[in-house]
Image (cartoon, rainbow, N blue to C red; front, side, top):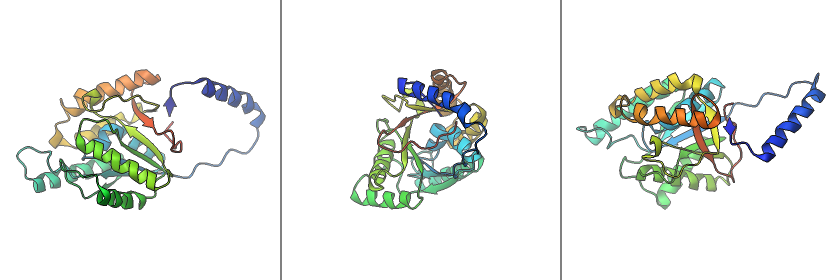
Length: 250
């Protein structure tokens, strides 16, 4: 996990450095228990594109990771009926999750026709709370795509209903052509996980990742965010200040 340095953080690091010799010879701190991570996206491919490297790194840490898709991408394949597109894109999501060692989960909304109302809030809150997450990632509320904004709103309401019990982070997509006004607070070094992220994104062949969303948008994003935090490749997130600080891959 990486974030912008601050005076408080530098002082904290100095205190740790000073205290370290005093701790020599003491028993090591107990390992943290495995965390439950839920990454939420409006469509198949969104969690993989925005968080695929982080998902892979969590899985390698022994965490249980769930990719929760708000829709099955019913409107996302030209020339296919909604039913045909849903079947194809659901299968692509399942293949991508297998690569990332995540479990796919689908909510019951429709691509291009997502709803945000009392009934949908209750439905989504029940689905997410049933997973008992420690850390949740969702889409940025200022994305151009209406389904992404619906995803963010439903997640935010579920977080409020949970009494802010889980760490809440937002992720970006498509290098400013979709996500707007995104100012990262945290970064995850995904350099070692990029081949798996790439493979997971390329599992969504119907979305033309080669020359499309991955090579055009997400490769430059990985390099840009890596430069910002001093790594080769990174994914960037905004943490909600009122939520706990969740365990992020180092």
